[in-house]
Image (cartoon, rainbow, N blue to C red):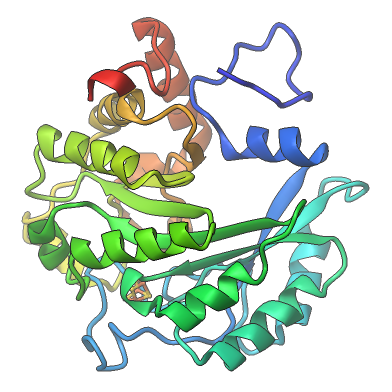
Length: 318
Ligand code: SF4
């Protein structure tokens, strides 16, 4: 498998999965960092259009980064985050990442203004837009497709979570998997690279259920996957279920094992944007092992080493 990260010495083992950071360095020849943006959008699963309570795992901030402040302009947010990066900035490029809430929930004109403001900032070489599959009408996809050009890093991140409708119901997503399939198909027709957001460890899902979701990602021919464990955030409906014992989280050992199984079945060409949930420790209820990101990533690499496998090892058989 390709490992394009020149910062890794020849002695460094090749990463056992097709990591987004390596892909970016290989493609752009420099470090590329994502700048999270909260553009002030809402969500149809909160404002009453689809639902009022939101997904059971969603915090009040709609998955916003603590670095984002919706009271500030998009340009200001980008400047502030760039200044907060401690590492040398020289040569680093950035992707404007519309992360909080539903970033296609507006008219195409409103969306265009927000995206244009972001990509006008210095050093921005890409646009990543996180959203729900039922907020991707054709005019919105046409708008996103208009940002396609050589050397520009365009990504549409869709909250698929799982291919199983009963799990989507449990998560209170307010859409079914058919909506995801339809959005992915129409995005693909326009040549928009899609990254699917996936959750492993949804209560009630068996190992086979999760492996079916891996196969579905292959069938949908997506370009990327962002995978994380189900984590419980303070103040969410999931936190109440967790307290009642109705939503036991995976242990680190279980997650590492099922994640490796999942990645083994994925097409090796799918770029892996993330393998772990990321959350401010102060807002995290469980599982607490997720705080130690480096330890978990090392455990995943060690597990692949032990198995002698990598992403895609079982792809043709799945
Ligand atoms: S769709 Fe996204 S923003 Fe809306 S409630 Fe669910 S997780 Fe939160």
